[in-house]
Image (spheres, rainbow, N blue to C red):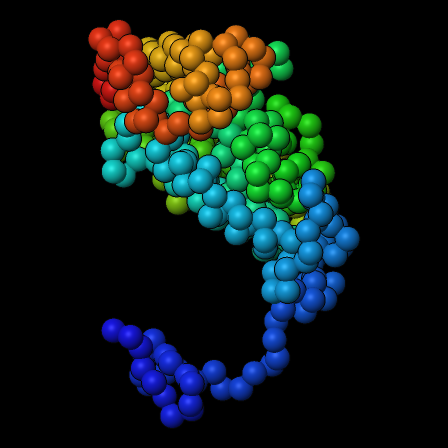
Length: 360
């Protein structure tokens, strides 16, 4: 179908008849959006006007605020698409199990629910949430253990995601800060939107990792700590509802992004349960060990053979720049690409590691 020509000359529509707009209130361009923030956003929310400092200065977009522009760049980036092939909890996930991509989308939903109710900047919230895990390597958090020895500063997915993975996108300082500091072990984010994403990340993964483990018959919801069942329920839906509701009411009443002490204890109990029964179960530990061996083998190979890297012509073996480039290349791989590349390079030894990574 090529669409429909309508009575007005030079117009083509996807459907006929079309749904009338019923008049117009005028164009909602960037300047109108920025002006609207003054009456829409809370006093402490991040404004687009006066923000948006980038490493390389750019002319403002006529339609989008600086943070809307960041959100769109992340959404269309290769690094974001690759999250579909990266482990959340389960390596080689079944169709219904989360990947890093679906996790990021669920963090966006939780963070937006909190931010919108608290009148924070939704575009900045979305940008940080979409980009927060783009620095993850293949194989889940085991990639941090695998890649850290190659870098003097270690490999932290949050820092790497902001300072390396996102560098080509030329994002705003506020967006990069939220990505860099979304982990609770990192310094406090510079914006309340960054703090919301940090909270939403933990809420989301605690609830959905449990749901995946229940579906995989690793645990049952009846085994949850009584504190969690009492205050949050036993399903993902009830848990997200309880945590989001508490985060909104607590944030609005306290004037800072927070959850109540009771719900904080429940969230920690849920997280501890997940660690003990899911992340640190023997099968997961064995899979993580295989991931570490496989990824370190790949980095070692590319350090010794830099010509095999996309920018290899500029590098020499064993040079610090080569090591960093090798880490960057391997960290950007999806799980399946890393496994297939290792099998191609190392044969039966890598195949044994890949088999050790498969679901048990």
